[in-house]
Image 1: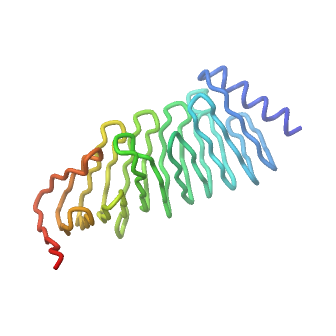
Image 2: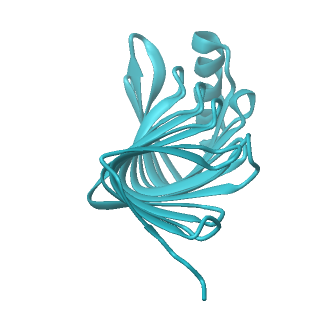
Image 3: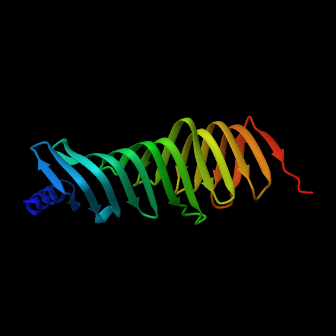
Length: 207
């Protein structure tokens, strides 16, 4: 029975948005407008190079298309990156979504080949445009090479190689030996050049 249901979902995916969605789960409950999956759920969309592993998931129709994913305790694998969160809402057609609660991400930067590490409360992802935006009630934590930073909000455009930090930014650059406090900092990932506004800088002079 489970194999028939999986093939049914895949057929709908091909018909509506020319993508094949492979879904495997311990328990499957299909309905007319929604389908429920529980236990060791694994989703793969080969065309988009995306995999999602989660504890449970609901897929809903939107505008007569199977496209809205609501997953719990999810791990998302995408091109040169992975992100985990307690909750995930994702639009299969648009390749956009929101991850919330204990979000952790590792993204290989295309300009510098450094791995960008992100910890935050909420993160919006656009896997088509390669843009990640997030915030935290306390602080967002960003790590890149020799740079460590905290802020209230961040935006990372992987295609253009730009990281923007906003709100009570504290940045430590171990390579340049500086510590910075600012309202806003923009980092160019290819060479770690920075532009800051309303900034205070502390130079660390080695004896």
